[in-house]
Image (cartoon, rainbow over all chains, first blue to last red; front, side, top):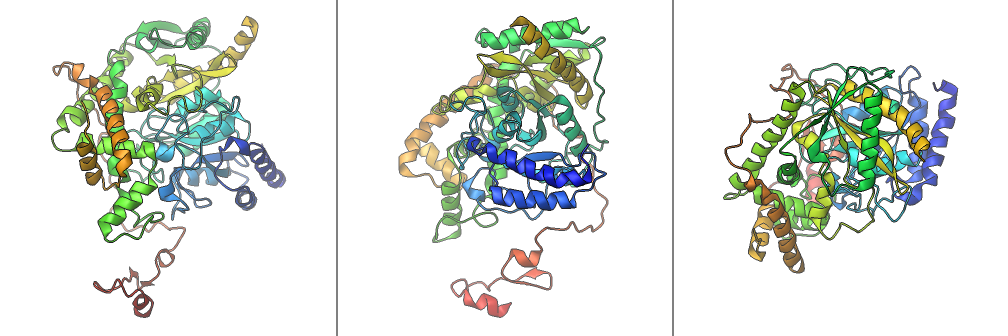
Amino acid sequence: MTAPGDIKALARATADRLSKVRRLNALLTPMTELRQSLARQAAAAHPSGVLYGMPVAVKDNICTLDFTTTCGSRILEGYRAAFEATVVGRLKAAGALIAGKTNCDEFAMGSSTEHSCYGRTLHPFDRTRVPGGSSGGSAALVAAGAVPVALGSDTGGSVRQPASLCGVVGIKPTYGRVSRYGLVAFGSSLDQVGVLGRSVHDAARVLSVISGRDLRDATCEDRDPLRLPTVPEDLKGFVIGVPKEYFPPELDPGVRRACERAVRIMRDLGAAVREVSLPHTSYAVPAYYIIAPAEASANLARYDGVRFGPRFEHAPDVRALYRATRGDGFGAEVRRRVLIGTYVLSAGYYDAYYRRAQQVRALIAQDFRNVFDRGVDLLFTPTTPAPAFKAGEKLADPVQMYLNDIFTVTANLAGLPAMSVPIGRVNGLPVGGQLIGQAFVEDDMIEAAYALERAVPALEEAER
Amino acid sequence: MSVSREDVERIARLAELRVEEDAIGPLAEQLSRILEYVARLSELPASETARPFVAGPDAIRLRPDEVRPWPLAIPPAKLAPAFREGFFTVPRLGQFEDAGSLAEEA
């Protein structure tokens, strides 16, 4: 517990730690601005808050009053929001210190944090590799020990995938658990604010603070904030399903071994483990890469050089102004997705692509309902098919990059809570296991994560 | 599924996005690759259906119908060069070329 007198020193220490990891390019906020802001926030923080003194870095697609919100895009360069996100307001009200804005793929579109106009973020343990994405800046800062917790956003795995690649905990709550007010929209039926933490407890505590009803977001459910579960002695009574479709032959052997060990741990702790089937899993990535770009093409229509950010050219008329600003302001991946989204929504293609993708989304959600209706409490899968990949390795082929999301997009399509928890290392690189829960039953998922968090390091050590 | 240069130009126009001439060819290739991949959905028999899935609450919850101003960090008067009696003032149509008149009117 932070004492009121300590908070100024704590704010300075946070700035010092963040300054030491500047080479990761994970933080977008200039250090001088950050130091001044942290000092102001420390003076204003209320000592009775449950997060009093906890530094929380925030992904740069979540609106803050203290710092600019650029989404890693030239089109929002220098943009200062006129309001702050509900999640940020709740963190501040709980006494947390907003420790700057983190680098991300432009508008959260990417799986490597290489698609930011501010340059790529480096993996904290191997600088030739990517930290994952799109919340790669948040994951790198937590993994490097610069902050205990950071906020991210998860549209197709953007919290869980970087958490897995960097060896930290990443939680995507149920769609509707956390307000999206002030989260810059990408795919509105998929987006959720999530939390990355160095421990299950830190991440869950912050999730509890930011969750709950919000009149400013009509898609946020009318529910109380998440109640934190206690750390369980064992997993007796839990039925954990292991979907066979998430263990394809091409899965990295090291990831497979780590998952098998995690399953053994859960079984030893008393959980009943069953193989289950989610038969439409292989269609999830194609469905996602129709629905998400379609929603993105509509959401990003507002960036036209008139309402937000800079204008890039003196254009002869207003349409030329829109086109020039958007053409110059959006990076390569955002342009691709806006074009794909426009294409699949256009006359003549809507039924074949968008309507079909929505039907497949319904089948994927039905797969999960079928499994949970048969008594399964939680599902366990790998978070990613392999550990962190080399920078530049997947940039030339967008489909190869998209396939990194193969195990994470399903939870977004079905609106379910899911989290990544570290389950070991392969050649020194972290590997995460994913727990997928039933809608609004995050506490079961967090309990199982607590158990894994406690047991994995000891077993890993014993097997060495 | 192959996307032509003309397709790229057409959807770029629809998306209000300027695409440089030398970027059209590579974009056509990349979009073709992506669309070929997502077209896998057509392998699924059309007879396979499930009840439509909509993320979020079953019914949109309406707020009480009352005016509740939410404060902005930056007041409206500071968001635009000219603000008077609750309105942003702008030049009359046809006067865009005369930027100097804005300040005088305000």
